[in-house]
Length: 123
Image (cartoon, rainbow, N blue to C red):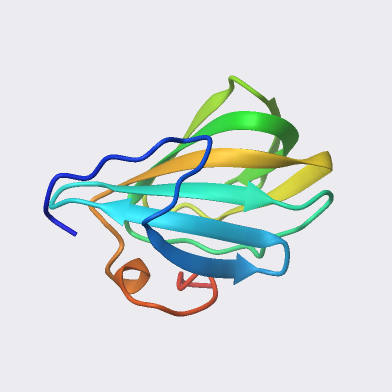
């Protein structure tokens, strides 16, 4: 995906679909230097603790939850933005209304550029 890409966050069709964990569905878009993940989290869905070399920005678009970064719980809600440094263990637990998150990875995650399941990070 290195051509010009355009999509709407309200309906991010056209990306590579991936199930990260039960209740965590994403659409992935990438260029040469960065990757976007438009993540939909079901109510109370919990991911798994993982880490990866890429820096990650998490932008909460809708809903709420707890973002665990380096062992510290951060209560987050729509409008919150958090930086997850590369190599830092992290996880997300969605709130009772679920959540939608825009994750930005730099550089792109190679493991997310092919179909598959899971976070594909180090555990």
